[in-house]
Image (cartoon, rainbow, N blue to C red; front, side):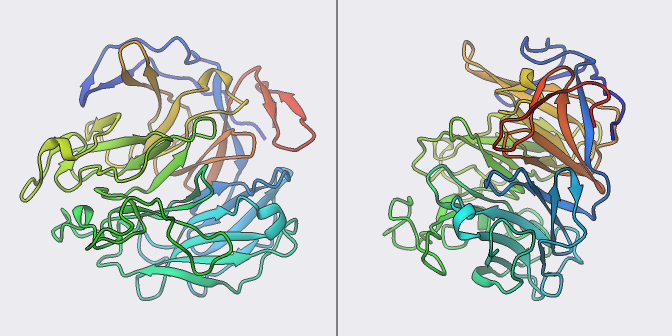
Length: 410
């Protein structure tokens, strides 16, 4: 079923070197109204937190529900039986608690392995391994294996993103512990996983091994799993499927929201500044090093007009909206504003153009990708796919089927 074609407002947000500048013009590559719209992909699902695929050529979407279920969308139909139901062990009573992350093994099609990140009854966050046999089936065994857990000082700032990088290793985001202003300095401490992105290997070695090229392997007084530090609540990060670059949406404190980028060639060890800096702005620099010790965002925006919390997305590589290819999509949770960030190689700066739709996207919890790289947005109990009128849409199946979008395409 189709929703009305959305229109975009003319308001442009340009973010350069930490400054928000009004009155910029839209980038030439971003489609103008009424080219873009959102179409319902899943009309009713309980509190979606992840939208992803298994990389197995089936074209299925997998959507996690905060309460502890993974649902399957096969051929556009939400199946009644969950792929996985672990509601009995997932604590979802806290606003930022629940089933928060899902990643399928790069060899899922042959081994059926996948990984989830959730909140346990004791408030700890857990990374666990599960298996589906056969991988082509629509249900998995509910018997899993905990690989690691992190005690949480509070119910918020749990992070939750899981993703396999181009190197085949598993990356995991953990928030700073949630206590206001990070008083324990978790973001800057290399003796805790809190406020970090971790990198581990789960290639047949349970519970896991630490890649020998992680930046803190062999460094006294550090945890070797750490890949990036200085994060507050990296709720969503992603890898550009074309370049391998990592993009991180890190939720700010009271003033600034930020998008960080680590190039594919990164050797890890980036320090994104929290709590010394919120975005590119000093926050609490007591005990902090010189500014050159820190890495700073490519994009940031201020808490103006009701904005409050960034939801990181994807560098668009899909077919449903080809004029957005090469743009990084992200949003604000409070306002539902969606932006397309673009890099200008000539000036060496990033700018962001608002993509405003008729749908109410307030409470946008997550972005997602299908096998073809098309992007989904989830808010409330609905999942939409982003499309461009007249574009050829690859449905994600191995047969290469394409469809030309129109205003009535279901």
